[in-house]
Image: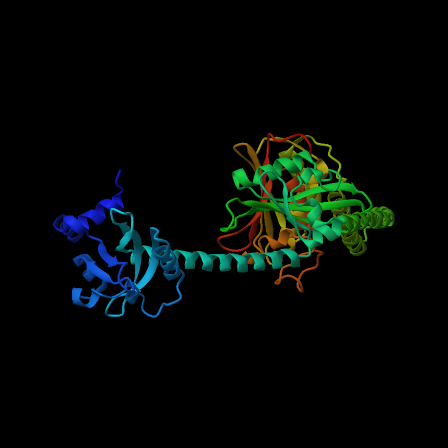
Length: 505
């Protein structure tokens, strides 16, 4: 059976008219060379080849095909072509050629030998297709990929530098909570090696220290729900390191060069901080008790003296004693506030909720403290008709600090308004003054411990603890507290407490 090459060779020798029609009708450039002549010259080219190269038939015939390669004498494609021709084999390559006007183009070249009836190679046929657009796009894509890889490497180096520079222990986890990497601070803190923990489940690290169900549940939700978490506190006795208290934060980390998102788990060792807070709370508690003991005695003596002076009718001395009693009361309230703050910070707040008639209790508080504010009238509107599960002590401290704050910062006003009302399933307590107001940028800051606004520091006495305690009490009650600027002047503090909440206050 004759093969295709033999058929073509036969056509060349016996029926050139059929062959010529086929060659001229092709849209691809076609040349035929004569391998029996020196340097394998071109003996035929079709019109498509002339259009492709820009050369005329007279300029092409008799030349070797390498004339299209210009000065690219050492290309890999040229070497492959020479080898295939020497072996009489078919070959397909992409080679850079040049048109007559010097313009470069990419040529997809297929070369095949043509044999005679005796199976001798007598010609080579070359078929050319202009693939410049394809190759250019491929080169551009490869360059883009190379540039992106460089950017990715630079980005990874940048992120790794940050990762290693941060002083807090960090872990990178995959979706199954396996460790991808740990920064040097993590390894240093927990005396581990990155290579010993990489690829291992988080639950196996540090003898199962992180195998905490609540923590694992939070971590497993980070990627599916894109839900970060902050402030998860845990304690563990680490072998050889002792008991540590850690504060953990985690969030999703997306990297364009990585197909999968990661979890960044950051931790802060707050062991010393918690110990110091405990010591501070113990000190404040001890100091408050030490102050309260002589203070109670002092108040008792002042009350005895006040009654005796009243009997004698000495109004001047009576007024002085009442002022001393008010000052002693304020000092007692300050020590009580400090003691309660210490309890909140140490987690030792007593939780003794009982159903409390809020309207009646707030009225008692207002009547109790009204004598302390001779220049301000406390105007109460209480119509919530609500019983709330709350510690009476906490409600009293909340109301005293809000009212005292309103009086203190409205020295030119003559009244403070207190409103207690029911709003659907919440109780609202609103204390309004006509004082100096609160700057917009300080509305959140004033609830921080020891914070005093820029416009009050030198004008008003105080420690900056009253509103902080109010916030602690309200947070424990699962409520909210916010400050509003009145339309005319002054400030309103609005406390919202859920009525049907858990009985754990």
